[in-house]
Amino acid sequence: MTDTKDLPICHIVMWDVAGNSDAEKRAAVETVRAEFEALRGCIPGMTRLEIGVDISGVDYACDMLLLSEFDSEAALAAYAAHPAHLAVRDRLTGVRIARHQVDFPIHRPLNTKETAGD
View 1 (cartoon, one colour):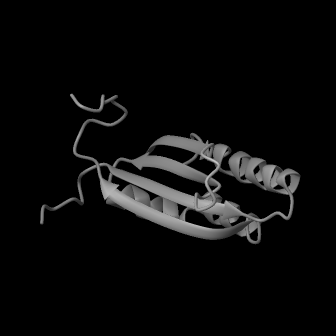
View 2: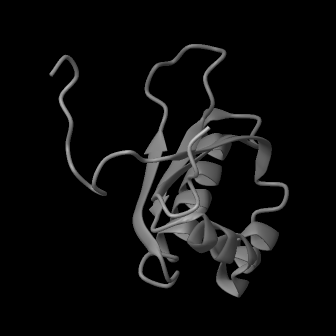
């Protein structure tokens, strides 16, 4: 296995949000979005932050996701322990009801577009 500690890292987190109605779920999605958007520019080593909301409508899809990129594994670890991130996590307790995460090394320059099939 290749040493990845110095490669950029993509950090993806998918959530389901609380809510008994579409309106409650939409409000929860907007709360999560606002909390994470507020971290933009506050986390050293974070080079990308995107929030996506599911549009598929399939019953097995997560409601939303965070896609972020970091300079390195160390930058991701620092984010995980950063006070601003921990405060967001604490404020969102009960709003996010399921969580799935994938972290992987990026073997291309950060923030470049790729076209499928190229």
